[in-house]
Image 1 (cartoon, rainbow, N blue to C red):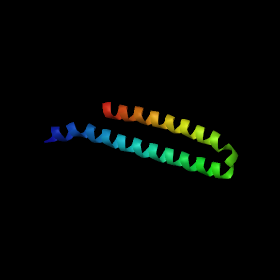
Image 2 (image 1 turned 30 degrees about the vertical axis):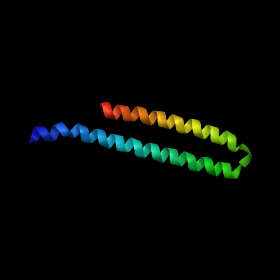
Image 3 (image 1 turned 30 degrees about the horizontal axis):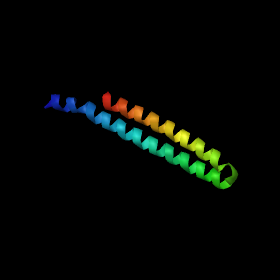
Length: 75
């Protein structure tokens, strides 16, 4: 019985890590979008530049998220 409990422990830790990565990425992209929309509302003339920067930042966050998920899944 004790061997089964220790054998499943790393799997539970991996799933916890995956959950934290997804929650963190969702929070980060949500905060990014909220800030970008607020700044577009304040200065509509630079909305195109802000939107481009937001898309690039979101892509970087997503790339890091996929890498972190891969590390959690393999480890």
